[in-house]
Image 1 (tube, rainbow, N blue to C red):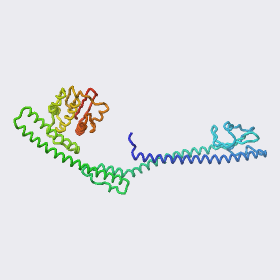
Image 2: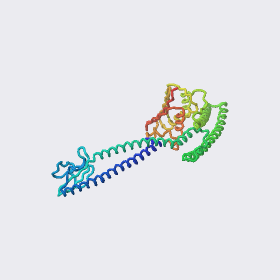
Image 3: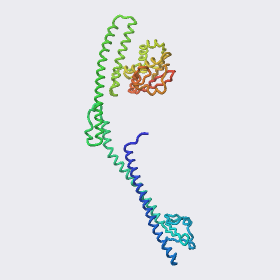
Length: 418
């Protein structure tokens, strides 16, 4: 579950505070009102009962003299005692409910028997319910106001955050060194912007070092490779034995592959829109034939059989060097992880699959095979499949790996339809 947004959390906190505060206030009002009613009505009815008892002692009590809403009950009185009153103990009782009325009842003692004086407070209770409803509506109104205020407040609070976010999105790689802290000076956002400026300054220095290194490495690596390739050209013009010719061709191909690797790594380290010059489509089947020829000695050393099923010859519009690196890494992995058996290569119109009969990959490790630090070889760097994955991602190729320990691994690349 995603974390709630800052706007939601601010509004929720405000609503909770307002709700709790309003509920406590309303509860306090109702509690105070109930206590006041109990004290006031209790004292009033208790005093009236004492006055009636005095009149009874003086033999001058007249029940008809009671005001409306007052009722006096004793043994032999004209009205029967309410069942709800008969169960009450001596003392004051607030809010005693009968079928349709609410009373304040005072229970006293007269000549060894209970006497009851009740006062009808139904109207007061109805007013209390009215007050309760008004408080409820008031609470809902306060909540609505809190929501509006919270929404308005968060707009004000988040406005500089949005401006900072928009500013960061607009930063371009060439303009990273431009500071943004000065635009937010004197605010809390300014501290974030200043910290971001420091981070970007360190990032610029890192990127500059990386660019300098790649440029220098590219130049220094290409120079000796060019010398080697020139020497190979000279040797190829001289009369050589068939074995020497094949060796020279392999050296020449290895130098080309090294140049392709340098070109590919530089390509992957630059922006996504950068492209390598490519004039002709790449024949995938031809690339695989050349890679198999270069790997002939490795295949012979392990007594591996190759099964080729080239049902089609797809033409790829990607750079030859990157196609070679991708396929050579997959083929090399298949050879290195297969001690005996065969490697099957299937090419159709939209995909290529390379299947080996090696030891396979444990199920729990499949998710990590493309990570740079993962390798099943002792001393391995894990760069091969990581480089393959980066190339596939750049060209929107879909790469899939299926493996079963003890039976082998299948790597399949699906090319997008043109």
